[in-house]
Length: 271
Image (cartoon, rainbow, N blue to C red):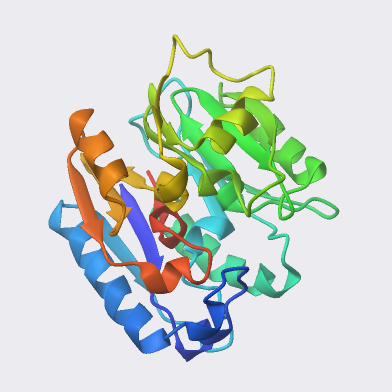
């Protein structure tokens, strides 16, 4: 499994954000935090593929929004069968996609490639995968056209895709992320988005861990390499995960939170 990452540049100061402290983004501190996060990923044996910083693209560290890579649904431990080049809803971010796709193609040369076409928009942050299900958020960044293109493509690989409304936050994965094929972590609002679709997994099929409302940003975690990576500063959610048997690694990511980002945003995973 390959993990594509990209360090922030000085341009990160201008990242698109609705956070109350967005004017306090410190690119140098963000770079230090990013390196510590990547070191933690590397420590569990993950193959880190580092792209160079982008001096003119403020949001480029959030590589997850640019690419989705999936194996066949019947071979979830197998290699990538499909690479999806996203078409970000924020026009200023579309220049981030080509370099991430090129690196992913070098890592998975046998995979088919889908490029989301106009008039569709799709951010990777609106896509969560658990087992053979692919939930696609329809948000301010991902429209029905883009979500539909992805749904058709993953359906051909054997996945069950369904579209979920996202009306109160940036992305679907802002409030709900998978911990495995049969376990999800999310907020009340995140699970409400999931349940608004008739294709959602019944609660007796997929376990749900509920994040306290006052730690809502802790719903964005990265489960990979047998660990759950989470942003530091959410003790109740960390206790919840530990009690559920998860091995937690907490890292400082508050500079990325100021840019509306979390652990999943900083990686593009290529099986």
